[in-house]
Image (cartoon, rainbow, N blue to C red; front, side, top):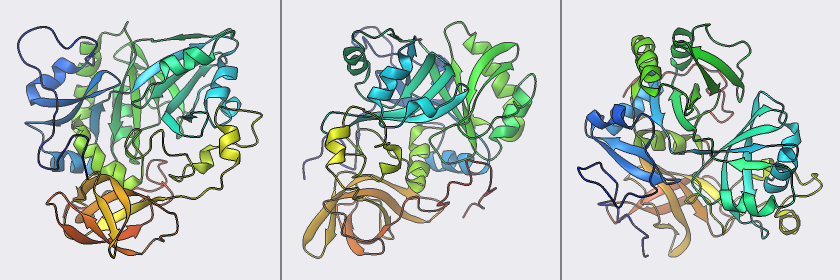
Length: 396
């Protein structure tokens, strides 16, 4: 097995040092200076810096902050703006879901495919009004793809220079109630959009996130006073435990929740059917890119959760059944809540069922006993992020 980067012992991240040059095209989040005192280490995501971990914020502590209070991640998601009479027409061609069903003031899940059904990227689509959308995309090449398919259409595709931050955890709506000058918007249901005033500044927020915890996201625009905005949120949120955490902490929770990462859990070689996303493919739509190829396939989910008592599954390594390699690990971590190794695996075949005992190669280089599991690993109906279940676990 040849690994693209991490060998399970070291990894290559970005940190800030004195000097200038050779960071051309890499963009800092408006809250970069807020993070700096904590000793951040960044990954480059959509050519934006996103903090994986901090010297002064332990990954496990960050996980429990997310599960018990409120955690903030300033993300590398990249919103693109689609505006004009043909915006819906274009997006309906680019995405597998029927975008016409997303009403103004609501979000949708946007999944894009190549002509052969291979996946490009995914993200949250915000419909701000009838002819204006923001697509907060995961890492991936999408802008040029959209531009190429917009030829002849009355639509403008632009970078609004918007940055996304997530506030996630059981007290997150308490933070929102305290920080909003007018309280929590009503309605503000799951996948809803609202505009609130934080210390007098109007800010777009959504009931979305990447954790399957109760939460919301806010969108910092160029006209905002970012320092004043963060100061206001921090002051109002501290009584509810609001603090920063890194992507490493969120990574644990997103595996537990079965939330996929573009470029690792799926890529151009996998179809939505391969990774259990067939519910986001509307084959009754008139047309979308990839529909003819997908129409020839039968949904066969090859993705499984992984549970491992003996170690942390190594991303890119083997899943073994007897002497046969039946798949690879696409995500791995140690779960402080489940008290075991967890992961996501992509199998060679969908025939291997949940509950099958397997061997999983872990970051210590050894094969450990494991089990194929359903995703999510708990909260199967995603009741926590919808506010239907209050589940604040005790720390083990």
